[in-house]
Image (cartoon, rainbow, N blue to C red; front, side):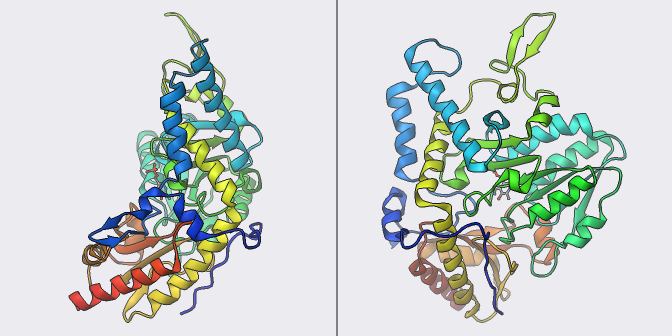
Length: 421
Ligand code: PMP
């Protein structure tokens, strides 16, 4: 089987500027040994490692200008506020949003989706209405909608995927009715690597008057996410999957929608004035950022986006795509190894099963060889059900991975085969 890997046409790598050996030096964690072997970190879809630039940006904040934001008139607070708000503008540019006030800081993808479900969703979805998701969604893009549907008496509909793990777009289109209020869909599948054709899908959804939320958790580390080109209404991602810290994420929302949405959490920083009789809320984005946010983490996220920009997403995509093709070839040389997720348009995920060997057994042996991969259902149980398997082993790629590491993976998987077959 040959899996041809394409990526977004807009990403043209700059010639010969990407040097993986040099890039690896930016990530101190990669130097260590595990079980006496040099670490091969291939669990990047779970979380990516952090470059020094991110670690140092957070360290500098705590050492030199730790202070609460938006509140103090003193110098440190002004500095912290400036740094925090500068990241909002960086994220705006990163997503090509029209305005920085369309960017809301959250705790991560999960919180972003829950925020939309509990605000826009509660306001706009009623009894008999429908929300569409797809079979390839992460649990965090299923459960919040199930909760909302349960509360409102609405229905959750599910678009199917084919045997390659590609969305069946024609079938998806058939699910839309007059009752459909929202399509919530992943940009890139964490379990399969499939990249969805979002521009076509959002334009269809909008022609039916349906809003679109895109889960970008697995997309932003690998490809350009342009919210204006995609024309989505909401876009969410997590900082920790794009070389930033945990505890911070982003919700992009079209401003005209954010304006009409009720706040989610109440508290400090999201109000203009409070009396016991009446509270007046701030405008977005502050309306949705109650309480002291993750200031250091936002600053770390800013450093991560600067780092990605410095390397160039086009270079990252080209490097990862070449690794993906190499890895696909290497793994398929192993007898009885089956790739789960062979979409024609795919980002850096190699999910597989190996004969009757349980993925957990593969994971254990592979770990002993110093290779970190993920085994399990990857918080995407409906994908496992679709392929009638309990779990897969998953290697997922980042900009610092090498062909040598793919070789180490293939060798470790062969070892697992020897032990268990
Ligand atoms: N969606 C997708 C596609 C994911 O891969 C993940 C993380 N595995 C999430 C959502 C949830 O992200 P977080 O746990 O950072 O909120």
